[in-house]
Length: 343
Image 1 (tube, one colour):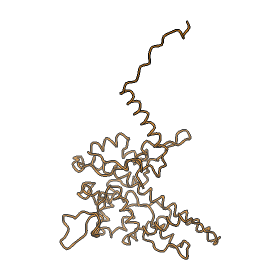
Image 2 (image 1 turned 60 degrees about the vertical axis):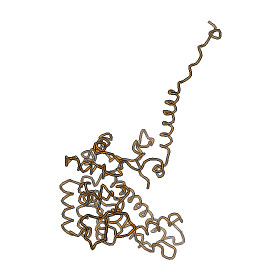
Image 3 (image 1 turned 180 degrees about the horizontal axis):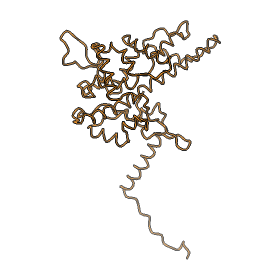
Image 4 (image 1 turned 135 degrees about the horizontal axis):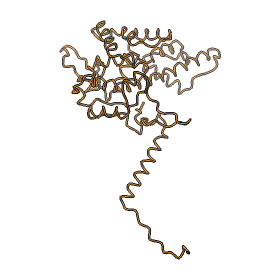
């Protein structure tokens, strides 16, 4: 039969609903595909920096959906997912089961702690590379081993870590660079967790829920954001520093240990462990933090007790899940990459 002689039925137009669904599906796919091509350094500009569960049940569901269980982290069976909690839910302290509350708190904290250490370690590795280049430069004094952008980054870092005059006669001072590298280093996960637990009452304190303040850091500045303790004496003027999100609290705490003069003993002990080539021991380093609390030695003993009774050292070797995962020799972005925070 000659097909040209057959009358073709008229094409049916797609309904408005079909068109909307089509564009949502294709548009959503294109958006996700484009997002996967965004460099990691800029991804935080396009996606949320963190998560704010509205209830402890939703927080638990989130962790379960990502198969995030502490037993698996302790046994190093899984990496910690990049689930960055901005603030604890309002009903967090109402959780009646103490063990459940403890588990939720540690699972909330681990990604934040590892993210801060990850960032510090990246800066430290760059400084070590600078030191190696500086040693080579001593053999060739005419060579300028640092670019203007590298020097700008280095100067900014020295200001942040309170190391002065890194440049001498326009060249990097190796002694000051060593001093800076000593400060730019990670804090053991077990120690961070222990202090967060001790200072926040496992995340139940007023300072955590009103100001994301995990570590009880005090401020005296008039223009700084902070909360007045209810038991503060009339003659005292300090406040507990508050933060926009939990990650900022962890960052400020680690930076405080790495830069404040009160914790020079902590940094010296950490440096000794580094030179000895041994793992950073949270319990051992806690002994150098008597200046953190007015309780001194009793405070240190309390931290060590928290570490021991909750086996927090199990988390010292924990790692964040990579932003990218290998698949048949190629690289694809992790399904949690969109939760990577700015900075």
